Length: 566
Image 1: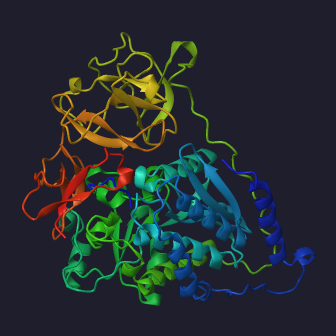
Image 2 (image 1 turned 45 degrees about the horizontal axis):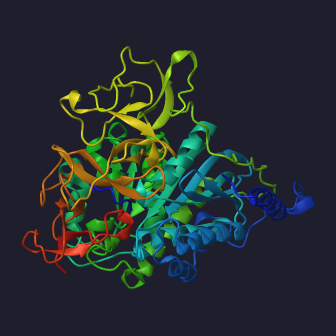
Image 3 (image 1 turned 90 degrees about the horizontal axis):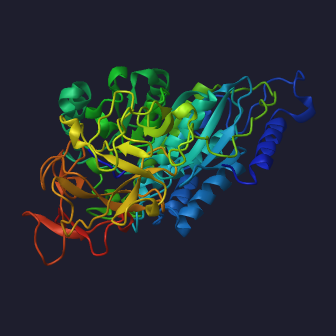
């Protein structure tokens, strides 16, 4: 699950598509397709329940054992897990695409529907993780679930298209799912349901082992009361969805009840699904679907609100902590729900031909570095619906680097071409606090003391910001040292940004701290600001101790952080 708390194809894609069509033809009986030969029933039967019962705990466990090792993006095991997803999808009869979107690679499998192929149902999980943490629960349990779902669903012919996916870079801004969904939206894909597996395997039936986000009881009184009736035990699967996902939600809950999986449905009203106060409920890849008006739900054991090993911050997230018998119930319920929604087809007809996916990422409207808009328009980045490049009318007197600027409601600003009016953190009451920053692609585009911050959803363009060391307090007045994604090398780096947010040890419901990271506090339902520190130098509050920050965080060597003492 994403650390930000308040909380394209390879050369084998075409043959894979042909192989999927051939497999569909074999299922249809080859030349006998269309003949009067009665229902064609696959090895997993012809009902959602029989398909659900094909899920195998041993196969799931084998996939989990393979995935659960450190796998930061670019590492050898990251590549191995990516390959495992691709191999499993292909073996199950899906057409496989390695969707290279710029800084990462998604693995996508598509099984075309027989009668209604334009409608798609997605089952997915992110496969990346952080640093040296094994990430067994986060998100080995989810990846293993998608692999097992693909194995089972590949044995059945469906009326609608089924998509399975392993997303990249969820931990670094959910870039993988954002890139896929943006492409799907532009292509007019009809995604009718999406099940996102996000940590499925941690269960604790003891009382008071389940924490809740701040103000949860006020916003969702019925789920809060249901949890209280269970003595706040962490022994259920949270189903985080919105009103627009009612059919897929109902299908999953019915299947969950059938397999004996306790659930806690949290249904967000449509007008609040993107509300800033509910950011804690959008901490995974379902957010990209919500942002693009697609139905989606996250299935989760609630991460740091239950699992002390989340991101290895207060324990190990390893195989020993995973309850496989608990995790497999969610996979079974999701597979049964997909089989119901996709519609099992027993006609024996061949699936519809698969349209090959684009071979390159979607092109931007313009180039903000080259400034190639026609008729004197200005190319800039706007943040409506995720950062993207677009042409806007130039400002009458565009402000230069470091000069005050304002932004309008459409994402435009008062900066000169080649600049962005910085808008990071919480909205400010005084717009003059924002300043124009140079747009960039590599650190060399910026002044000597600055680096290039990548902006979410944009593959290779960012804005310049000053470098810093969080342990040296070397940022200018009213700014703080934080770490964000770098546009050039794709890893995190440190930057000075406006110093808004909570102080050390204070609650951080919006995820912003004046220093350190916003992390879940042990024994409380709140996330609090955890300051940086060095061993032997003090600086941590009572009951806290210094522990290493995950190496992938991109902080200076030796940086550590105050966390709950173990």
